[in-house]
Amino acid sequence: MAVKRDYYEILGVSRSVSPEELKRAFRKLAMDLHPDRNPGNPEAETRFKEAAEAYQVLNDPDRRRSYDMFGHAGVAGAGVSGFEGFGFADIFDAFFGGGFSARDRARSMRGSDLRYDLTISFEEAFRGVEKEIEVPRLMTCERCSGAGAEPGSSVEACGSCGGSGQVRRTSQSIFGQVVNVSACPSCHGSGRVIRQVCTACRGQGRTERTKRLKLRIPPGVDTGSQIRLTGEGESGLQNGGPGDLYVVIRVRPHALLQRQDQDVVFELQVNVVQAALGDRIEVPTLDGLVEVAIPAGTQHGQTFKLSGRGMPQIRSGRRGDQFVVVKVIVPKDLNAKQKDLLRQVGGLTGKPQKVAKGFFDKLREAINLD
Ligand SMILES: [Zn+2]
Ligand SMILES: [Zn+2]
Image (cartoon, rainbow, N blue to C red; front, side, top):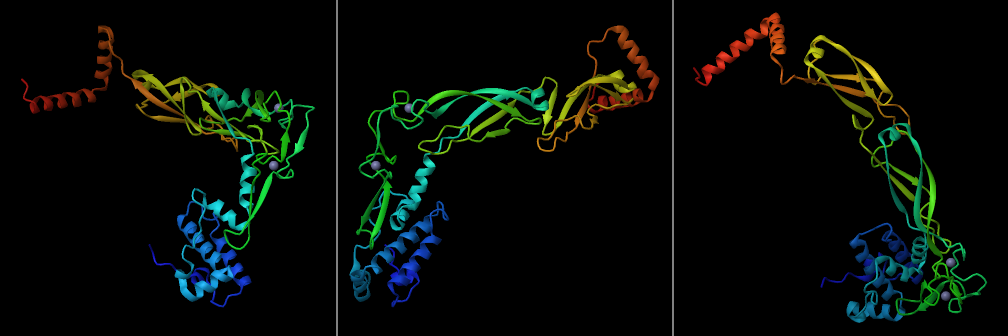
């Protein structure tokens, strides 16, 4: 076990510190080590426990006297005990009156967020679309308005907590006087006692129902885009707000066009003659067919840009471009006449034939044919 640090040193106070100063010093230190400010920081937790133990001892006049005379030996067994299995926040709450648990409880009453996956077509992503979706979800029970009690039956304030939903327990065991606030075990924090539970929701206050929702999908959405519908998640419990609904978009691929962010790519297949002589060809775009002029001598892989024919940006509406990538298709399975014609074409140019011959001659030499 590590050597224990001096309690006064831990709290950064002098040995003559007054009870008020001691309290102030501890509070200040504790706020710095607050679990919310130090999420998942085991060092802050260790330091807080150390500070709490120091405060626990020095705040008790008898134990402080004993510590001043005999040091740690005089207060053997001191420590923040009785918290095994509790989180840092719970321990913190025990010292400061449970404000944090109360807030956490309120949070847990909020309805859950929901996710809905929606698939739309490429064209719908381009133009935007209005969709109607059906979302099954837990909603406030209509029969009892979320109270959980059968209509007409009496709902009484809980006798254990007087209707507050909280029980305050004052204990001396931690240090000084500590007020511990927790949910009332009799009414589970609701503050009410239901004599006859609602038959529709069995006292839960919510039932599963399907709601139809109209949804506007803006132009330009892509696979993975999320649309948040605030308050359209599950209803909360006991005045807790509803959760949100997240609609997650998937865009079906297009048969001819490929999307790259805001741009669209189209592969245009042309034959050798079109590539060599040039041609005017209609290509599909998001706006319909558009004529593209392929100049004479177009090479395989050459790309032409159709400005402003891409997908719109969701916010600005500004459209990307379409890129037309040329793929030259070389003919296969030619008949004798076609081959002859091609040879004539080749003969006309002259030069390539010579180059080809020289190339094959060299190849023959290299691999010792003939
Ligand atoms: Zn009900
Ligand atoms: Zn109660």
